[in-house]
Image (cartoon, rainbow, N blue to C red):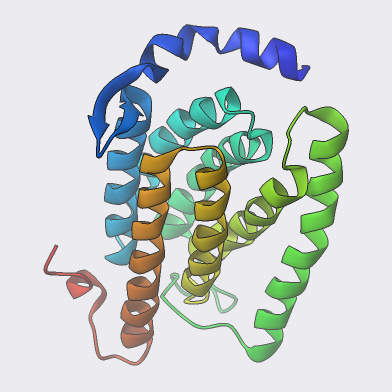
Length: 224
């Protein structure tokens, strides 16, 4: 499907993309507002190691997929579809998944080798996705769009397997994404991803506490 046909196929969403209300002079659409609320709820459930975050991830990803496609951020839009598939997988992993010892998945940390492998995979995916976006879409920021796309794929896999390192990965992804969305003037989403960066840093601290036995999973972020 070409970029033009994608835009035509999503024209039904235009009423939901019209300004719904204005915050500090910045128009916010109904679609972006709902995607924002559901995404924040998803992260809070993830921080608490609660599998209910995964169905919220599915719905918010579908909403953001439409928003990003209409903003010509095709890498981010395609990523949302991948997120839906990964969310279904991650949901299953958290409910029924096992580790390498056939024990039920628990929050744990990667080895030093595993961390370097995650970084290497991200760096390999980045130019590959960038070339793909440059070739098949009319994106004006294909390689910039590709970087958080690559990082998000790795971060989502790490989250699904309950690796603590998913959180620093999300910190980096969210900071890069903030600059990308500011370029596209998606200001509510810029603020949302700033909040995500803070929550990801908090999640990193929380999950490290869980691994050390200092914080029971059900008590993580208990104040929210």
